[in-house]
Image (cartoon, rainbow, N blue to C red):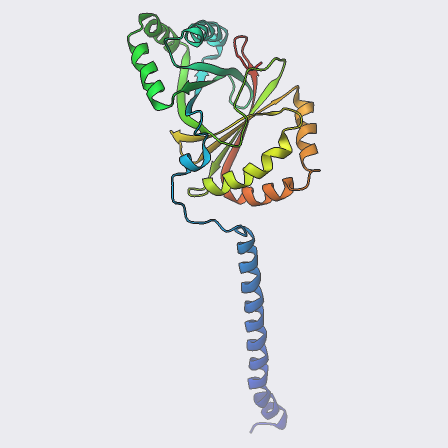
Length: 279
């Protein structure tokens, strides 16, 4: 036979479950609201539907320059010989008016992938200039001999074709001594326009010390990749310059909205070779 206490306990169960259900619903609403608020904070700036390719919207139309970046991983014992051989060929092409290309800069990686050479070329006239240059090089016996000799020194190589952001400086020769940092950002597909919109405002915060050299995005090769090239007197100057940017209103906002667009990022600190126009 049920006691008065047990009957009272049974009568109170619906009230108890009702209170627990109400608390659970309130918690879900709070969590859902917070989740949506956090998620929306990543996309506060509305991005309008695109009506053109990001290459047309973000690049410098007035110059029509195409860039090529090369990464050559060299056998350690051949690095010095490789630098000498590359400098000789680059100087010839750079000063030969028959070839519509020029060396923007050449470096050896100091921090990052070791025994690596990085070369940045500019083709004034875009893809037609690149095609003309390649066709002429295929008929150039000296260049073909150079490639054969160079192949003995390399472990691997890869390249990318790039366009220049319209709001960045065009790379120009500069005196040294400097170190150079190549910061590479791999973006989520579809976010290049948003990246460009934020950096068009942010770049003004990184101009006072003349550290901004060039900004590029890939057209052929690994896609949705951005390269920012910076110059500093030394590593200490790099740290001070980067820290100083955080004192400027607006820089923190640019970082806040661009970080969620990045899949991965990489930094190379490079030393210019003797023949590099960027010293």
